[in-house]
Amino acid sequence: MLNYFQIASSMIRDIGMKPKIALILGSGLGYLTCEFQNSTAVYYSQIPGFPASTVQGHSGRFIFGNFHGIPSVAMEGRFHFYEGHEIRDVVSPIYLFKEMGIERLLITNASGGINKTYSPGEIVAIRDIINLGFRNPLRGPNEEKFGVRFPDMSSVVDLEWLARLRERLCRDGHELKEGTYIWTLGPSYESPSEIKSFEFLGADMVGMSTVPELIAANHCRMKTLALSCVTNMASGILKEKLSHDDVVRTANRIRHRFSDIVGKALEVLKEIDDE
Ligand SMILES: O=P(O)(O)O[C@@H]1C[C@H](O)[C@@H](CO)O1
Ligand SMILES: Nc1nc2[nH]cnc2c(=O)[nH]1
Image 1 (cartoon, rainbow, N blue to C red):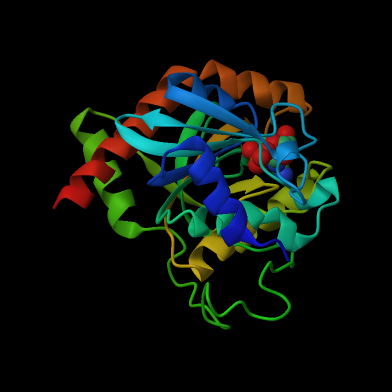
Image 2 (image 1 turned 90 degrees about the horizontal axis):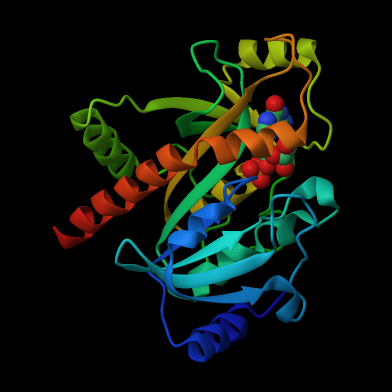
């Protein structure tokens, strides 16, 4: 296992800032770091023993900087199990963030919409998850310093943060939908029959990430918000075939709205923390 404490301490020392929030930016959503001020990049490849990012739309680096007045670190590119990483490596950034002293996490992703009230380009908050990947990043000896052996999973996101964001958006006349995200291993997209069965299971969105990260964040008691960009309707719902290029294109198309929602998520966070 990586010595997260050592890596985190040396990163904070070298960069000269201590982030308060970490953001994981999903497929095609990395552009948000353009809004970081006084930013510094650290490539995953510069960190000994750290996994490499291999997916198009995931640059493979951390960006440290000030974001909406909050010292922040963002991941431009995450690790997916389908890339061949061990499940523990998929969540290594979460424990690294924890060792940096970060207590707040904002996870984002691109997903396929199963719920037919959604439409491509819509941003939906994740309220609950289904672990259809049947892999658990907590398998193996428990790291007591991070959390308990059997973490409760009754709310995988911070409900106060979510409610405050929903209220904030509502004041501006925008509805923030909430839904259940189901994790499939990928990298193939789903068949129409799979999507029908996921709908039956209660899933609203489908994707290939986020669930291991939410399990690990919950394990180490990080307060988390998760926003999903529904880049496409899931397989079989519309006629179109699915492609990663279209996923990235849609994520790019909604950049203004996405940036606005994330900005408001940070604003309400400042209010919560100031109270
Ligand atoms: O990293 P995320 O979950 O945003 O990426 C999604 C899932 C696959 O990696 C890819 C498929 O297009 O987009
Ligand atoms: N599994 C899965 N992941 C996605 N990421 C973006 N769209 C999709 C999708 O339709 N299915």
